[in-house]
Length: 85
Image (cartoon, rainbow, N blue to C red):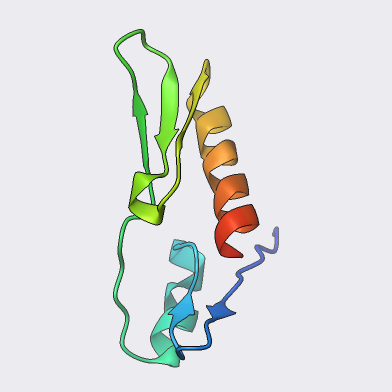
């Protein structure tokens, strides 16, 4: 069985942020009240390529990518680099 890493970021305002995963849901609930908000949108564009719109997190549109997984990987890398998640 593979072990998944789950990262919580505690902001100076006492807000705890994380990239949601089903495996981390119980950890987030143990911290307190949970509010889930979209950090980005990974969607196909008109040309059938994948883009990660980081607008909800204050970022750019990443891509286009041939594969959806490449857009998701770029999305997670951007969140890690720019939001510490």
